[in-house]
Structure formats: C-alpha cells, structure tokens
Length: 295
Image (cartoon, rainbow, N blue to C red):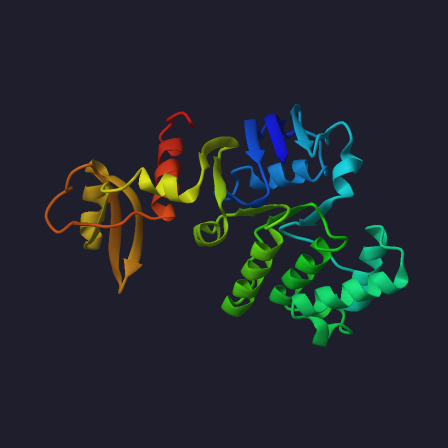
C-alpha cells in the first residue's frame, strides 16, 4: 500500500505544483490523469524520492519515504517522461551498468535478467547498438527495461507510451497488466484510453489539486443518460458553447462533433450516447477551469 497524505509542493517561481494531495494506492494498476502542467510529474518525482515536498507524508509498505528516501529507492522502478543516455554505450552494457547500480551484483543473475528484459521489451536484436542511436520509441522501451531491473515493488511510469507505435503500445500495456497483479504500478498520463484500458483505480489531477478518485466504471456511470452528441457546422459551435455544457469537440469527417452534458435533450439533432471515461475527464477539467472546488 502507498499512502499519500496532504502533500504540497511550491517551486521557487511561485508555481504551486501540488496542493494538499491525499491518495491511497493499493496493488495493481493505478491511473493518474491530468493535462500538461497538472502536477503529475511533480507528484511522481516526489513519490520516487527525487525531490522533497514542502508538506505532507508518503508511506510505502509502512515506511515514511519522505524521512527515509532510500527505503523506496531500493524497491522502485521509475520511468520518467524524459531521460538521458550515455553516448556510444550499447543497450546491453548500459542496462548491465544500471543493474549494478540497482544492487544486482551477481554476474550470472544480472546477465540473465538483462537478457530477459531486452527480450521482454523487444530490444534484444538491437542490444549491441548504442542507446543514443535509438529511435524515440526504442529509447522508450529501453527506459521501460531499466525501470524493471531488480524486481521492484513499486513502479512509476510517466507518460510511458509517448513515441510508441500501436504494436509497441499494446505490448507495453500487456507487460504492465502482468506486472500489476502483485505490485503497485502508477501510470501517469494524459491519454485517457490508457487508463480506461489498464487501470482498476484512477485519479484526476488538475492545477495541482486532486479533483476526482475512484474506479473508472462507477465514475463513468455517474454520467449515464446525461451525454449527448451532435455533428454541427463551425458556425454553430460558438453559439452552442455559449448556452450548453460542452464536454468536448472534435472533427469527424471534417465537421465538428460535440459531446454535451445535459439531463434532458439539448435540442434537435442531438442523440444520447453512452458516456466514456473521456467524458468524465473533460467534465472534471471543465469544472476545475470554471472555478468549482475539486471533490
């Protein structure tokens, strides 16, 4: 169990990245959703003991990791949004070096785990190539491999599918689901589909505040019979946004399609649709932007 209590963090430039955040995260896949600048990366770095909060506690498996950061580092696998690599060092050598830093000192055991992770992330054929020469997707997969070194008890992945093609993304999803059966896996992302497909529990962070927590399906059920869809002209968009609660708009075959929240039909041409997690997400963000308190 990972317990986060009243966590706050303000940077030197005055940006309040975390504002009294409290969460309880058990074993399995936990999704953390939020737009860019919501505070997700700050929260992930704080949990990973890479920076200290201004206030609050983080307890993992009974240990306060703010007071004893090394306790979580020994059990942590972390894939940040951006990470650097050594030039001209091959994938297998760099992964071996990182394994030593993780405490894997038995050479045979280390070699076996490095090879297994390279196979698991589909990098074995490229193992002798310099990581600095990898494509963006290959670097992402290498980052996943290093995060899994040492059989961590807590895995944090920050925007993990960025740069991955659909096949790689599916492979990574399957890997995360398999890992999440026995440990805590936190998936921080702005991709709603990743959370919907993978996570049994989730939270939405916006403006440094925790705005919503729960299981995806019950959260979606709150909007049952309240979401309506219509394709409109570009000229109609502004007029409808002025009088309706528009959750989202996107282009479909070149025309805007609106999702609207309403207890009754918003007007002619609207059809009622089954809500999705994306509707929940945009509803929460819309409330936050309108100044409504996060619940």
